[in-house]
Image (cartoon, rainbow, N blue to C red; front, side, top):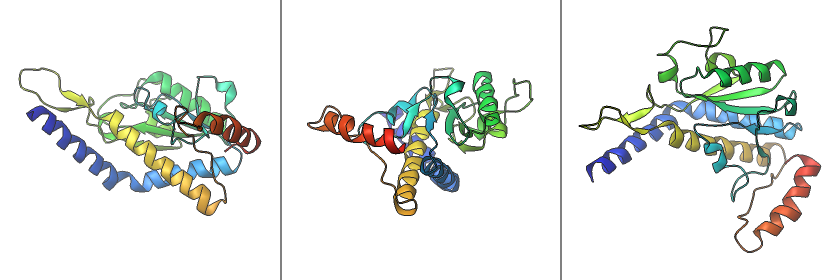
Length: 217
């Protein structure tokens, strides 16, 4: 299975590049989230690289403080954090959302590919791309045009990079946020149990939900 092995190698190299180049930004993002949670802010995850945010929201092992952003700007307030994504950095709807959120005093963490974003022109009227407008950005290290592998006989490249890299980054950010809350803020955030494991649903409903309603974490 040559193509499978090539894919595995490409993923290993991708994640190594993320570790080598993004660790400082990951720590910065995790601390930003922890600061917001400890100050009463809410953390919203918008669409991240074709919905990898759902790997963290309302599932076993995921923090209760992550909430899905439903595109309602009225839900955002100063001090909140919004995580957004555009691999190319020029998706107009995402850039529009980022501009509006920042204007409201929301901290915006943007996922993008700097290799991709620096090779395309902006489409937003500001003349800027996502990484230039967000509070901070995380580079998912995807190649320009997204896919990683050339396959003989297929015109398009194969195997998207941004999803697996962004999921990896987001869990790293989350690890930093949780550790910072516990060790520096004196807060033990609620972490979901699997609702399908015995006792999980009761714990989520009767322990975590009241805790979040009272404290925001």
